[in-house]
Image (tube, rainbow, N blue to C red):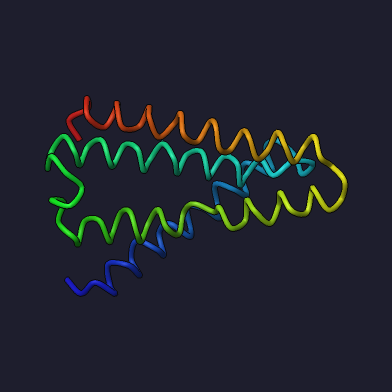
Length: 130
């Protein structure tokens, strides 16, 4: 299949998932904090870890994974799904408004919990028959 088509397909689905999940998170937990973006970023970390772990279990190395599969799922879907550019903008706005505590909690929470979820995703991806 054409690489551009795989990227468009994965990216379109990732974008829609990001929009609806982030919107749900904001509506669920309120507008005072960027909960929707945090939720999407953390879930994206878990998903990329699951993919990496599953790919390593099945193919032994990421480079051995068919390029079409990586383009569709990692570059297309997850590239559109995760929103670290939005994360940076929201952190900047909080800092500019003088909300240092909220900004620090948001930035550290995203980074620390994100890495932990990637580790969890890799372990689950290696263990589950995906």
